Image 1: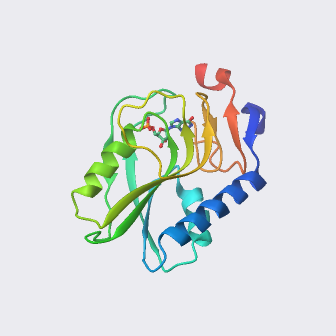
Image 2 (image 1 turned 45 degrees about the horizontal axis):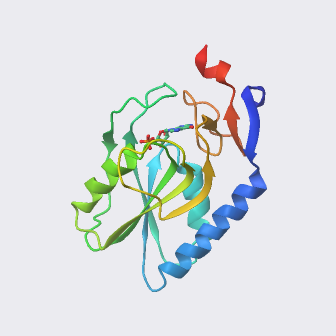
Length: 180
Ligand code: IMP
């Protein structure tokens, strides 16, 4: 695995510190409330689990599966909701937890879908934001750990063809891996 990574962008320690910071922000912003974290599987599973433990409030979690990428390293333009929530979100303060905001297509679709269910609020928390990527919607992150450039990154939950999610750091995948 490690040999396929061109360079490390964020170390395990840097990720930990950033997740702690976001946890503190959410704890302060949602004081007196019981937010629901909605992790978008599979990419956000590690981030969601770590973030949950940094929020010092009563809160619960649920998961959705929304897919906009196949095994390709470029966006296919399709978003499908393959697994819905188990929780009734009427009147709830929802925080969508995503691994990476690229074109914002996935999050735009998920957010508008959740808004139809009459939650009290819906905010977006992303581990990474591809700031230079062309966004196809006006959906932006309310909370984020790091900005990244227009490179294909893996690790800490992010995959290429289902591999590399278990890297403890976030790194840029060598082009030759996804261009071969
Ligand atoms: P969007 O709908 O274009 O914002 O794409 C978001 C989804 O694309 C993310 O949840 C990831 O699953 C995937 N994705 C986008 N860029 C990367 C990347 O650099 N590495 C791994 N997955 C990515």
